[in-house]
Length: 101
Image (cartoon, rainbow, N blue to C red; front, side):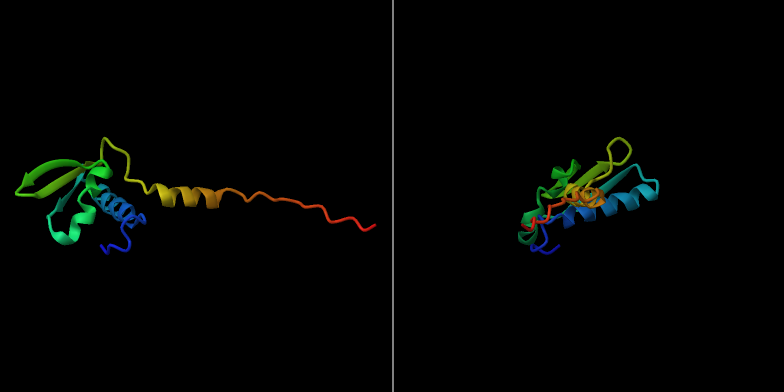
């Protein structure tokens, strides 16, 4: 993932999509690896920030799991809030015309 998109909620959409695919296949959890490198330091806390649980650590390479049965789906709060706001009817503001006189 490009550093230009991290923090703009693309990572939330990616995890939401991956967890949705795992759930559609009937899997009880989604597991994701993270291999340490200089290039992925920006995402070293990504899985924990979305409530994934560290289940394995071998020489810095970690495996993170998300329980699809007990936890709610991964949610992208920014996109969800935008979608909810777009679904609300816009408030109509009527401004009286200036009276001639």
